[in-house]
Image 1 (cartoon, rainbow, N blue to C red):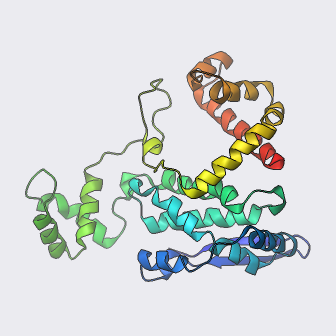
Image 2 (cartoon, rainbow, N blue to C red):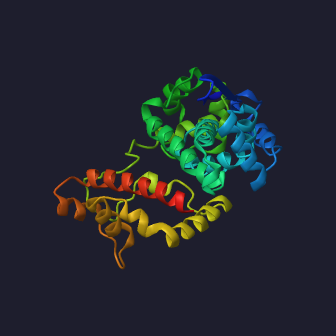
Image 3 (cartoon, rainbow, N blue to C red):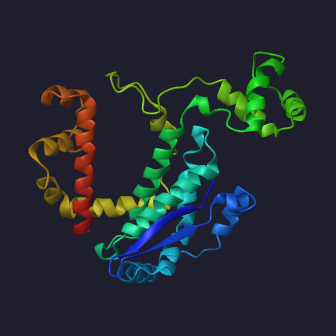
Length: 299
C-alpha cells in the first residue's frame, strides 16, 4: 500500500507542495501503527485554530501535518466500525486518512466548528467509496497465497460444515499460510455476493442492505460532539437553510426529515414528482449538503 498523499496549493505563490502521510504498511504491523498514533497529542481549540490559520494563510505544511497527526486516532476509530465488510483494516484506515487530509485542506477555522466535526464527513466518504469499489467476490484471491487457498480449500475440507480448529491448523500447515487466512477465505467462499446498497427498486421497508447494519451505530465521543453542534445549528439556522432551497428540494427534505409521525418514503415522493426514487435520493443528498453548508455559516 502506498503512502497517502495530497497536494496543498498556495494561491499567492502558485507553488504546489505535497504532504505525505506514512501508510499503515510503513510500520511493522497494524498494532504497531495503532500504538504509534497514540503518541500524537490531541490539540486544544486554541492550538487547532492557530495551526489552521497558518495553513490557510501561509500554506504551512508543518501546520497541516500537526492537524492531521492529531486526528489519526479518529480515523482509526471510524475505520474500525466498518470491519464487518471483510476488507483489510489497514486499507480502511488508509482511505480514511486520505479523507482526513482532504478535510484539513478545506477546513475553515473561522466558521467556529472544530475540525473533528468537519472531518468526519470526509473520512467516512472516502471509506464508503473504497468499500463500494471493492465489495466484489471476484477480488477474493489477489495474492499467490490467497489463490492457493482459493483453489485448494474446498477439496481439503473433510466436511461440508464449518472448519474445526484442527482442520484449520492442518490446512494452514499444508498450504504454508496463516490459520487466520484459512478462516477468512472460508468465510468469503461461504458467502454469496450481494448488493452493498440493496435493491432500490423494491418498496419494502423490511429489507436491510449491508451498508445499513455493518457499521457500528454506537456514537463515539466525536459523534456526540458533532450531534450537539448540529442540534445548535438546527435551532439557529434551520429556517434560513430551508429557505435557501428550491420548492421541490424543500418539500423533499421536509417530507423525509421534518414532518411529525412517519416520514414519507422515497417511492411516495417519486410518485408525487413523477421521477424515480433514485432521483429523489439524489435531490435529497444535494439539498442536505447545501443546508449543511448554510448551517455551518450560522454556527
